[in-house]
Image (cartoon, rainbow, N blue to C red; front, top):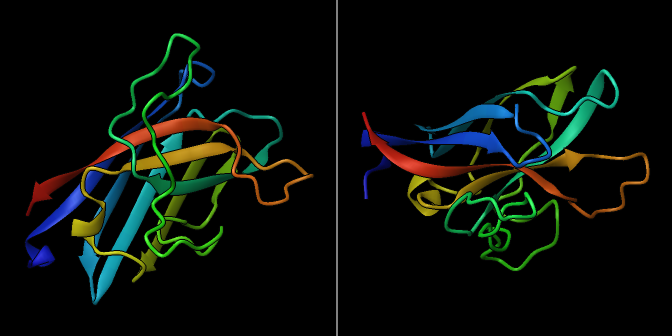
Length: 148
């Protein structure tokens, strides 16, 4: 499968606790891997600068339940059965400046065709007591294929 003829996009929206959260994630072929670019605004602001965890899940959609949380996000994308932060779908942190974050990085952990149909998930900001739990899911976007 030649991934150089297409790329993927996820339009990210917030759950009911973060209704202003909006963003986009691009996945483009680059060398022998993928260049990932994520831009998000409307992140909740507790302090001026926050760290938000972002990863890929195997769920089917970003439908919000009556309780205001994402219902169908499924498990972490983890085909090698590893722990955070070594799972295939784990990505670097989003470093927010007030409510905005921008991230661009290169990875060979996955190819574009591996992640089509999966979900980009943004987790709540890390607390000072962070010990490996990725926390509540506040943003979600389905990864969809686009032709070049």
